[in-house]
Image 1 (spheres, rainbow, N blue to C red):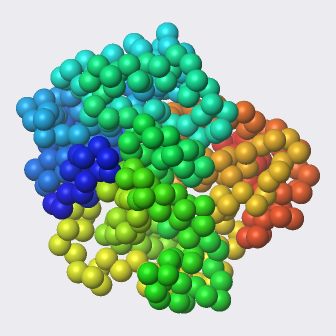
Image 2 (tube, rainbow, N blue to C red):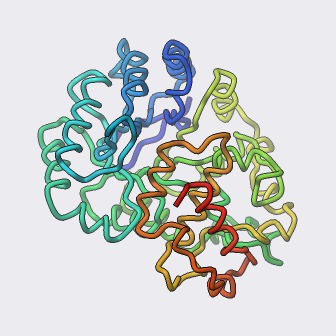
Length: 380
């Protein structure tokens, strides 16, 4: 397994990491065995945003005998209240939740203390001024968290983090569907000259990756497979399927990216991801998949570009669509995803069906209909 330096943290992390989100849906002994197997294949970084005791216990037991060989991303602000996940900045919940994480993971420290999931400017301002950030800084000063990180899906928030000077790494959602502009007549040659930049990437996201590279802020990747949709031609916004190796290579060729945290249910899936390290250039080639995708691939597909704004009801349409897309790609809507959706200031139920957004959408997405479906799915 190749290792990469995670920006200014200096940690040497495996190119392929472990996203632990689905550990709780398997028997404990099976999940413990899966993490240990991943470690035997060279994986040394794992994300634990999950607040539920079962997931945390699984990770703690799996790494107990080799704690110093693992780098744990532990999230501050992911809390467990009345048997469910709640993202919180209330210190009455934040402190006990982090102390619980520390106890269950084992040891006296967390390698990467993650400022948990900030996606709006309002929440950035709230977190950066007050007791929450004071607590994060105190944990860092005392060595309880060895490095400060932040998780976000929003490139604008990620940019603020990279420019902050004290946030050393970012956990960011990254894949071709999130990154790419819609298909155009230039699609066939969009990757022709890598040195001149990938013209198909949203400029804001491309700027973020370059900034992180310049500022030495390492990126770890979440949602690299888009919930599995990019592995399935029927669900892929490109109308073609990628392989795990191609998507891993896509992530790892972005500037500043050090590790992609894949989700696993089986040892076979671990093997499929780790196969990246011995894959040929042809096996890694994602560019030809994009270049040969049907030119209509984006028609009707939300790419979360934000052209639909402003909404008269102040709905964050792109974020609603993102949560909706993630939800319908899974047999059951995860409670974590439901909690993130309901935490939005305005949910899809606020839509009045004016369709002004649809006139601005460059991809012909039937947004009003999607808002109705999202409201029905999430119940609000």
